[in-house]
Length: 416
Ligand code: CA
Image 1 (cartoon, rainbow, N blue to C red):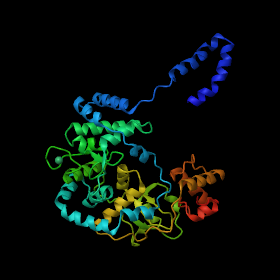
Image 2 (cartoon, rainbow, N blue to C red; image 1 turned 135 degrees about the vertical axis):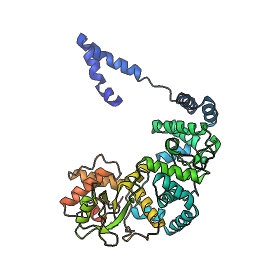
Image 3 (cartoon, rainbow, N blue to C red; image 1 turned 90 degrees about the vertical axis):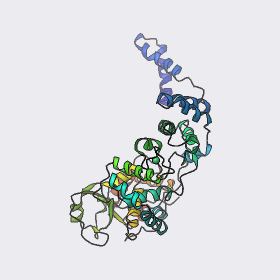
Image 4 (cartoon, rainbow, N blue to C red; image 1 turned 90 degrees about the horizontal axis):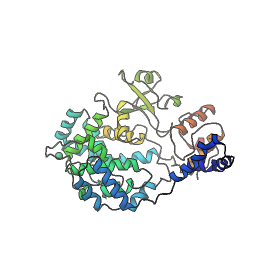
């Protein structure tokens, strides 16, 4: 906005010299804008802390808690570093999955599901979420409670709330954190979490904690750090609030027939019977069920990798963390903890991770050829995948929307 305004200012000045009364209103504009735009002294961290303290009190946090906590809060430079850090390379699906779902984690999950069977049964009964999923979230979030993060949550959230990039979001999180301290769930100096403020066994952000955490062990406190009953019941309640479907699984690995039209794996949701008619079977080649449910086909590593049909609960898992890889990892880990084996069609390990520069080049190359990949941003989002799919269709390639080597070669994009 400001740049735009600066560009038209000289013309306005010229018009004002003509002194036509009809232009008065326009002539007044630059002056107003200039006074509005007077540079304010940048707010220092101490000032910001005071302002947030007042905002917290206005939002209902007790003056004592707001003052006690905010007075002691410190800026953490590392948090800003981590917030600014952009991954230089994409993560391949093979890498992602193998790091998160491996024999050690599966075995540990199988032990824990037995050890805590009474608690988990209680949670399932109350929320409809089966035990293997609860344990899978627990495994992915904190390796079953072995690592909660060591950052002071009030410090890290204040640091982020006082930083311009995502100030509104983190101000909300900070105020929620202060309310959690205020209600006596945890003392401020014990409120530890990830650098971005995710807390406890299942890494709830403060707003999620405030809305969905419950006291399941009856000690009067919602304690997601020290009470597994509280943490598991809270996870179940959160999933239930996002309409977890107790009747169906998350989805399943499937096999696609020869010459399958991969362009159908574009997020569309079709009846299970429709997928069945297209020749898709379960991972063992057996016919899919007759259930009247909808599913989306997902090929996270392209046509050389595994295929999945994702049911309603897949979307629920993505409400917890908006990543398809994450949702598949939760679903697959839950299946394995419940006794299933590894994927029938494991993701290819020879796929290279792409750098942001390579993706930028790929986006430019698609654009030059008339395939709109959106604004080049170095990220493989839906627009880029859709442009890839269209290009592949036109070139007679397998239209899986995946940037494999063949595609990069065809577009003369080299790894950089
Ligand atoms: Ca409790």
